[in-house]
Image (tube, rainbow over the protein chains, first blue to last red):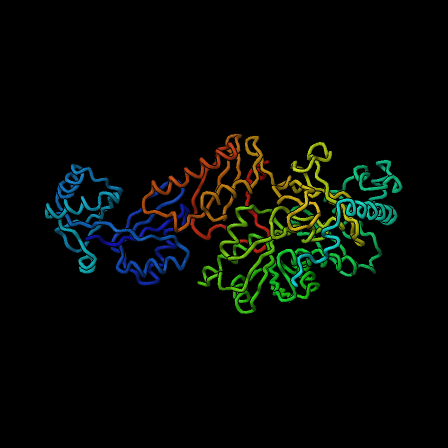
Length: 145
Length: 436
């Protein structure tokens, strides 16, 4: 039910992000989603790509610190209130959302949301998605978006 | 049978016998330098000391000190005590902190240097079957030569790899079957990382011991290197001005470095009053060479801080043992009035499970000193959640504050972004000096 996300340590220095993206480009990795969380000293770059394991390998070869994290990607109707409904359900069940970010595809009807919940809430979130008919994107779906 | 000592008789002599030998050799050395080195004659005359006033080791405190500045002022050959035609080899200090110092060796001096390094090699379990991989730089720096000569004396096979070309070091470790590695501890770490990166299982290498020195390092770093390279790590100490590496060395009990007291007199002095301190008390280490012919230093102030003990070691050696170098009087950072040694930060990092690759950046902001500790983020602590990573920074900050009582800013930086060293590590950038 989850998809693989790459998390990469990025120093807060000009050129750090370009260097990482260059490495991925040179290895023909296609980016599907991108988000950055930054602190004063460093950032964490989060990516969803077409070949997670290859991307992790080529980055590690270049001395990057990389981890692979399971996140949910859901499709919500691309209209006002589409996301609000799902988040309300998660909130009511007291699911902790560590972070979330949106990405798009060629399909105009849906917006896609990556959601990382706290470890303890992974199962609860899954149950909520299933019982409410939320469309959860699998790795295979992702390739066809 | 495998030798436990290289020269058992002197290495296990009674304290009285060592002291008597030191007295005899000191008297002769003082007489010789007074006659042959104008600087020593002038200093002794100024202090009102005649060679005949020095009757035994007890009188050593009457002699004036020698400092690095004295050696620079007499550049290049002013402190030599023999005619140049007796000098068979020259070396020079790195000159990182100013003008370089040139030192000379007679044929006998080189033999003694090899002899004291032979003692260190044997103490590390070395014998004629060993392959001694020397990754200290070969050149004007004294580093590589002492252990090389020592390896020759014990009949081992010396491999003069010199420093640098780390990938090649790994190939040689593997293909030549090196059994004892000699280099600086920082370079040992660099080599250990390269071994790991090459996907080599260190426990499969024939390497069994390392003799590391030429810069201060901590006990925690020793354990780290031992674990990474699957070896036993020994400490060797020395300085160009006195002889080079080999002045003192650890045995298998790793409880202090045995000072080769038949060749050097060690004193530990209060850094402020220059009065001798008791065994176990930290002070500045001062050496006097008592057999060296070409370049004998008298009461040379090393600026290294440490302490000594005269208790007999479990290994049977009776030479005084000196502690690891706890810092240098000129390495010491004074941050908001608190004395900080880089080695203390290193201890905290290793205790908290970080690799000892770090950089200290000192600056002055609004007339107040700031300390930033940069440390590389390791794959083991990395998380996709920002707050998890910042909590590591905070935890480290707290540990530094507990140990040193100062507030430091901890910054996680990318792996391999902190420079690796082939020789002595440079771990401090003091930007305050730029403002003065």
